[in-house]
Structures are given as structure tokens and as C-alpha cells.
Length: 622
Image (cartoon, rainbow, N blue to C red):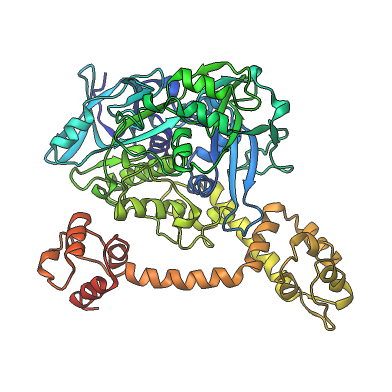
């Protein structure tokens, strides 16, 4: 069946695996995607949504590089929202609600239309390794499939254990068996492994809910989209709804705490700090009598509903009784109860920045196997692992995104440099250069890098260049064009801004607080220029951000340049830190374990002090 050798084998067909397979194949590698169930490629195991705070920026970055997640999200969206619009543009984050079935179907079809991708449905039970180098995989049927590189994207399936109250059983997802064999082999090879936990809420019958008692949560009046390609924005949308728990609901849930695997010791691993279960929330925030719940439809037609904010592993009878006490849920019917799942992961400090393992050559890890949580975090790692596996096989330089180039760069650098002991989730606060890493300019930042390695298409590059040219033309128009007091003062007056007596450049007027592009378009000269050049909303937004936040952007670029100078100072491979007695013991221990490649990376390791960096710089002649 498998006489030929593949370039890349991807194990797992979730978000990480799908992006890894697409990336390697589109770059030209002969790729095999092996997954336990081909019907579940791109499955949304948790909520039916993509994007959100910082996560939306990651989806835009994946799309700018040439990945599929943004396109799939747009084609299966049922609602679009730009979050945090009341804040500065560094915080704006796109999010879609998606049709779960169409999302998975679109992923499957896009992969099937991708040349160089083969598929095989079976469990991978082990790796073929020769001389510390991976050369393929072994399946549960005993079939050896050889390849030059392997990307592991096992999600929650490695020795997965599902908990519902006092009941527990093996499984990687509801209704699917766990994957065994890989963890044990990797540990024998010297890898360190650990356990993590995540959870999911009940799914319920939307026909049994009373939406009239809830608060409607509509999408944006003018919906945007994720992809920089020609996908279409939504013409109509489905509403979500919001309701709240109560003190009575909390009391009913507490009645089951003695049977909760979280509190009786059955679950020993850590769950995601920023997406806690409902029992964890009412335990940690005992002073709060109420928590928000968002009611999210699973698709255009289905009546199945996702109860966001009610993730739980309590016994099913406790879940049901408590949920029936929530406003609007008085007659609720369950499709299935919520549950928690424990699974194996491998601390990501065992990886290089390419996501290749340090112990085994040509073996890459991506997604929850690295200790992350979230579709977007997983997809971005899969994309980068697929790209770098291909580039290594072609003996080309790897693609490593810097912290000032992409949230993906921040994510991978955090994982490799700091590691994680709890499920890692991306936030805007993790990025020190978030004003540079906005959702509106992901294509300007990343498409040229991707095009240079042959991944982003010529069409994508041309589209990006046109956007750059048009936005610069509009910014220059504001810089070069003057406006008379009689024309600009009515606008200043409408926003309670000081009036002027002399004409000045439009750029200066536009830079004032509360003056927006909509205000500037009231000026005939601006309106005519925009119409003549057929500038769309994307160009207007890009120009407005560049003008309004030019000072912040310039300051962050200066700080980023300082980072790049430290990135240029390389540390020799396998450097012996024990001989530097002036280093603190903690610094010697941690840098020996992580083996940072540059001074900049070393400076970000937890416990490494500025004085430790000074010692290193002196030793390296800097």
C-alpha cells in the first residue's frame, strides 16, 4: 500500500494537522495526512467559533502567509464581529461564529483539492526512528509508512481520558477513542511528558430554549471577513444570545462538588486558566452571584446549541438540574453533557523555533501536544511546522517569525523559551509590539516573507502590493493637502476640539483626537479623491490607523530595532554554561536546558536576569 516514501507525514487531522498538511503540500512536498477519522478533519471540538481577542489576529496572519483557516472560516461563517472596537486598533480582534458541519466539510474539500496531499484513516501507534532521525510512522495495523519528516498534531488524543462526574473512560473526544503508543515511545527516547486538562460544556436542543428571556447578541451591522483573498462577507447573519447564572444555579452546582473529578482528586492536571469550568469559576470567584453565558448556534440549520460559559465535568444529573434553573433554560433538553478531558503533552522547551524536536531530527510537534489551547494557536503551529519541515528537506533556510513580526512569532517564542505548565492561550498582552501586530496589516507584515519562500501566491502578493500602494497614496494625500479653517472648523466644533484660524495640512487635522475618517470624508476634496481612486473600506481603515497612531508605531519600531540587535548576537550551539561561574545558578540551569540560540532569546527565559545577560555579552566579546 505504501511502497513509496513520502516527504512529510502529518499525524492528526485537526486544525494543526490540516494546516501542516496544506502548507507542506502547497510548497511542493509529497504529503500524507494520517488521522483516526477522515470525517472529522478540521473538527471544531469545542465552540463553533474562530478568532477573538488576539486569536483573530492569528487567523489573519495564517491567511496572510497562505494558510487555509481564514478562507474556511469565511466560507462557513454565520456571524461576524470585530471585538474591542471601542479601544485602539491594536486591540481590534475579528471573530466569526461558524457552522460546525460546514467548517469541517470545507476543510476536507480544500485539502482534497490540494495537490500532493494523500489521506489515510488509521491510528498511528509509533514512530520509525533510525540514528536519532525519524523515518516514518507505524500504524495500529502494523503498517510501516516511510517519510523524510513527521509532524505530530495529536490534539487531546494521546492517552486521552474523559471525565463526567465519577465516571471516566478513555477517549480523545466524545465518541472517539484515545491514541496510544506514541507517548510511551517518546518517553523511552528521552522526552519529558506531562498531563493537561481541558473541558467543554453541554450541547442542547435550541428548540427547548426560551430566547425571549435572553439578551440578543447580533453580528456587526457591516460584517467584515478574515481572508485577504476574494471570499465574500456575510449578507445575513444568525444571532447569538446571552443569559446569566444565578446564586440558585451556583448552589445546585455545589451540591455535586463531592462527585466532581476536579475536587475529589481524580483530575490532577491543570486546565486553561482563562477558560475555566463553571465549577472552577464559582469556587474561585465565590463573591460573584452571576456569570455570563453565551448561547451560540452550531450552524445555519441545525438546532444544536453550544452553551459557552458552562464548561463542566460535574455529573450529568447535576449539570441538567442546574442548567434548568438558568433563565431561558427552564425546559432545556440535552444533546450531550459537558465533560473534561485529560491528555498527554510534551513541554515545548524540547523544541527548536522551527518546531522541530531537539532530540529527534525531522520530527515536529504542533498544537495541543505543545501545551497550547485553542484552534487558532494550533493552526498557526501546524502551518509553521509544515512550512519548516518542507524547507529543511529542501535544505533551505527556515521561516522563523520574530516577536515584532507576528503573534505567531510571539506564541512560538513563548513556548520554546518559557515553556508552559498550563494550557497556553494567546492574548494581546503577551505581545510587547502589539501596535505593530494589528489585524489590519497582517498581509503587509507577512505576505512578502511567505512569497519569498514560494508559499504565498503571486496573486496574494499582487493584492498586498496594491493595498500598500493605495494606503500610502491616501496617507500622502493627507500630508500634502491643506484645508481651510472654514472647512475644517465645523468638524472640530462637532467633536469639541479647538478651532483654527489658519489653513493647515489635513494630516495634522486628522491626527486630532475624536476626528475620524468619516469626519474627513465630509470634506469634498477628500471624498472626491477617495471616489476617483476607488478606495475601499480596507484602504480607508489602513490609512486612518497609520495617521492616528503614527507616533506609537514609530516608538515600537525603535524598540523592535533594539531587540533585533540582540537577536544578531548568536550563542554557540551546545554552549557550556557551567564554565561561566558569574552566572546565577538558576540561569546556568535554565539556559543549559533550553539552549537559547541568541542573546535576545536568553533574555526572555524566566529567571535569567539582566546581570546574567551582561555576563554572557562580556564572554561573547560584546
